[in-house]
Structure formats: structure tokens, C-alpha cells
Length: 240
Image 1 (tube, rainbow, N blue to C red):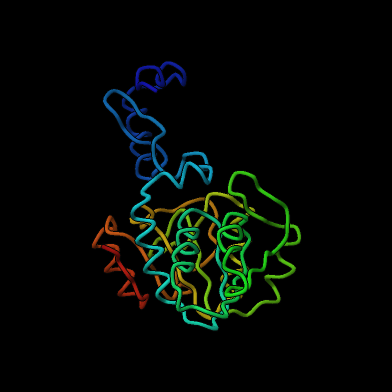
Image 2: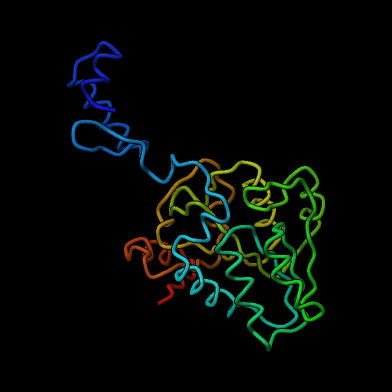
């Protein structure tokens, strides 16, 4: 929208419009462009499908998956969240031929399918629940029935944003609710997030920053934010 158009629509001065837009920019709601503003921040975009997300920063996600998989030992019990980065973790686990007797709980049909050829080396358990086609994910009702009864070694959790003060957030409410239960079910919580997600805040907070034990991110991560997470006591792994 142009500043002149907004002034006419609301019957206010262009000076007031510019002032209001400055407030919206500060709140990360809009992005200023010459003569007006657009909705262009990550927080205001619609949720991407799994397929759309998988095509974004693919090499960074592969590197994050490889680094995250190194945190796993034979005999561990794991939770793998939905999403393209968590799927990269699952794929990296399958390439570790030294791993045996893993028990993996997931609410992702994509991850379950990726792990299926590696049964019985891996035991794969789907949470159950209502299917969301956009992410091929299983959510409440019923997903909570199994998650509330678990106590696993490690949970690998994806997100739309992780912020030093506002915690870990996601754009979709049903999936955020499931992610929150996954966090509570694990002794160690590993957030896997591309560098672009650091410092971002999305709609639904599902974990406080104190809940996060390890952050695995990519080479695009801003150095100042990496330092902040490290200072908060989070083991922060930045891939090359």
C-alpha cells in the first residue's frame, strides 16, 4: 500500500501514516518500501507446505541434519518433530550404519516413511492423531495420548523462530501444541533451525528458551545471536 492511498482511506495525514508505519515496522509486521509498505516479514507469511520448505536452504538443512545426528547413540530413544529440517535429521540417522536399537517416536508421516526401510535397526512409532496434509503431520486430538506418557533421551524439534527472550515459536497452533508436549517428554531438547530463524518470533510459543539444551543451526546464523544463545547456556552448534 502507498502512503498516499492509506491517508485517503483513513482520512489522516501522510505524516500520521508514516508514523504508524514506523511503529508497524518496529513490531516486524510490515516492511517499508519507497512510497509505502508491504507485508513481507517472515512472521506474516502464510505457512509453507512441507514441499515448499524442503526446497528452501536445502544444503543448510542437510548440514544441520548431519550435525544433529552426531548427537545420537545406539540404544537412545528419540522424538523427531515434523518439518523439512527434522526430516534431514532422520535421513542423516539412516546413514549412520553404526546406530542400532534406536526407538524413534514421530508425528511425521514423511519421517516414518524415511525410517521404515531401516526397521528393525530402528523401531518407529507414530504418535497417531489427526492428519494435517500441509506438513504430513499428526496433531491433536489423540497425539497427546502417547506423548504425555513418554520419557525419551532426546527430542529434535523444528520451529519457525527461536529468540533469546521470547523462546521457541511456531506459526501453526495445532503443531505448536504437539511440539510443547514433545519438549516436556524429553530429557534433552535439541532445536534444529536454519540461521534465518534465529531471532524470529512467530505466533505460538511452545517452549521457553530455558527448555532448550542444544541449538543446531547453519552457517547463515547471525554471529551476535549465536553468542547470545551460547551466553544463555545453550550448546550452540553452527554447521559449515
